[in-house]
Length: 239
Image (cartoon, rainbow, N blue to C red; front, top):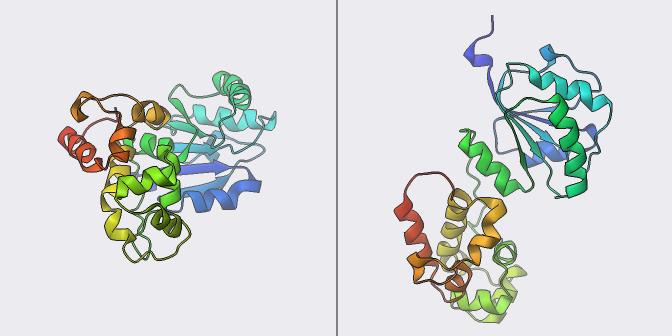
């Protein structure tokens, strides 16, 4: 007799060629990582709150049909397809197969930020990750916001040369202190802004910040104003 103890929070399925990559990608979740089998039976699918199918560049094949049919099992509560490289043609081909073979409770994510948001809504939470120095990847954050190094320098009230050095890993002793608001804002954006609509949100004037766009407010050094507005929202669904 199956008990609650045997219920897996998260099961991740991936082709054998990207299995190691999937293990690394989901290493901060309590996840069972399994290879996509060539043949599958419903008893092969563990009882799981969420099952993720990590597609990468995988083309749908005939042997995927029996695999997808397994997810019609009542043991599968929710199925999430993760395709990190948004290809409309590949997604369409997979969508055709999924629509014919899969469970109704299905969703798609095309970047890891969106995937984490969907999992969080299903109460599947990643373990907090802290690097040794408490530093943020400044170049990644800057590109996420669509800023130049000069704009990021203005946002953090430092010289452009400092941004160049920090992104190169040089002279970072003050970086953690200077980027505290930046890190907090990124975390709140992950919680409240739906990932596929993030660029639209960044460019939309908001009454709460005097009709500035979030992108302009960030450049003007007003990250704390945006943080305060997020904190006022309290707990809730992404917007």
